[in-house]
Length: 153
Image 1 (cartoon, rainbow, N blue to C red):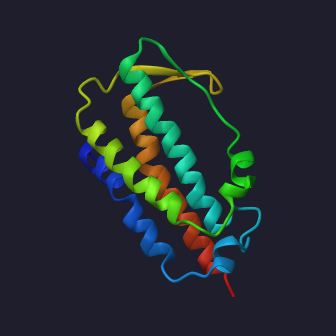
Image 2: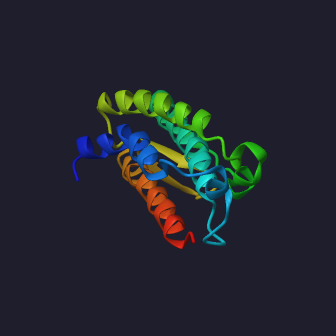
């Protein structure tokens, strides 16, 4: 897959998410049909947390020498009230703006080999490697949502 195709996956994540959850009830969004996997709502709220963090990591790498990236406890984030409620519109709106800006930023990167060091993973990542991860991250969560939908009665 080309960089342009990966950037397009990031740019188009929200419409694909909206299509996946269209017509679901609050109960369907917040019921853990596929335990121990997250609910549909938790998956979508997690994408905001994760992709906001990644967007900032890209910016730090682009603007700093030897940028350091910190991790976070994604399960603890998902357990917070804002990470598990059925109201998804705020998170989808954040993702729309975030992904539009992120895709624009990605389209202008010249040095894809620039690196940042992830303190928790104890390794460095190039921007190219990070693009690979996040181009596929949204798809992975859409797949999780589809697996939850398949388990619904």
